[in-house]
Image: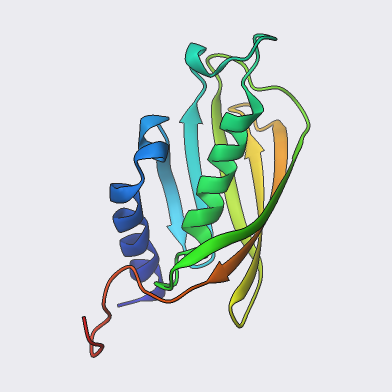
Length: 146
């Protein structure tokens, strides 16, 4: 299995179990070792009292892209710390895209940067996620016990 096939298999299995991302209409546009790109439409149900996309939904999209990127090696990884900076509001009807890229991966720790853009390519948020691998895999690899 190539690293790209492994990343896609991990993403497929994770998305099957990820009710939250699916419920918000997220789709995986691309995944590869150490990176992932997800999209999500902003619906009227996602607007806050100011009539703009609630930051929690933007954070959730970025966090999901981070999760798919740091789990792309078939090692279970969880968030250790995340931080987001909002630069512009999301609007109803926008399609937001979160692009996660691995910055560093050493031992059990990883650092990932995520940029969230709208369809015009305007950046609306930047996110940094720190991951930690824990025991387990998404699927058994050939030659390993199930």
